[in-house]
Length: 317
Image 1: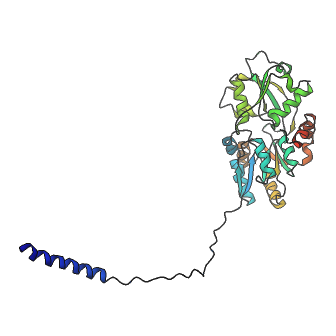
Image 2 (image 1 turned 60 degrees about the horizontal axis):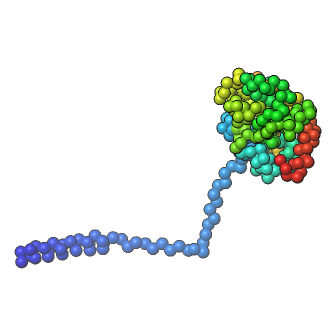
Image 3 (image 1 turned 45 degrees about the horizontal axis):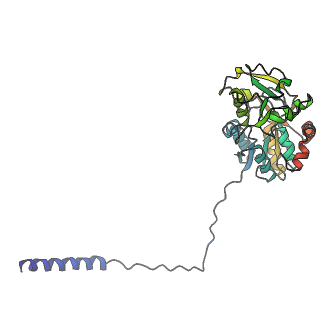
């Protein structure tokens, strides 16, 4: 009786407090939405970029490091946004240019001859670190390989090349062999560097490790790999004749306004300017000069001699 006497008033007090607090809240306003009235929201589009690709002769990391400052410089000076893209293979690079996915291609002469067939056009080429607007292919082996001291010693040996579309890393040396009466069938094996990118390095490393008797590379590659191997253990067996250097080409349909502005910025660069010299040096060049499609006619003649133009028409690479 004592418990009931005190418990009942306590319960009534709690119930009253609840009614007071919850019942005294302001009535929630109902918001009615008219679904027939709609407003279109526009999401701001990102600034369109001009795509720039370096033919993947080296790893993507090397390609980026070599050209990142040059791309930044051209973007600042031209007022256009440039974005570097990274094809995995020479063939993918070619297809991307043809499909309009690469606006500005930086490639070897043989790849240029291929993409020119789909309407791409050369507008600039580089001056090599040697100071020449041309470059060569090189045939290399280990210095302690006494079985190969001259070009003819390569007969019956294993050869690792860079890529079927590599100029200095395969096609120029193949042309040199042809001039000396040496055909593909005269070698024990011809292999190509595997995987995406970095193929010049892989060809050198394969010979350095003794996996192949000799390799073909483009002039200048040994300087690129000197931090990975002791290049004093490599010897150059032969060099090809010089061909016009690496080329900048615009895809078919790229605005002449864009091309002309970028050309102006490129041709204005000088080794006499410390900032520009550092950018050019990092990119592996001493300058950029004008180019025309006809500059690469010697490369077309070589491709014709090797039967490559006929093969490319049939889609055989």
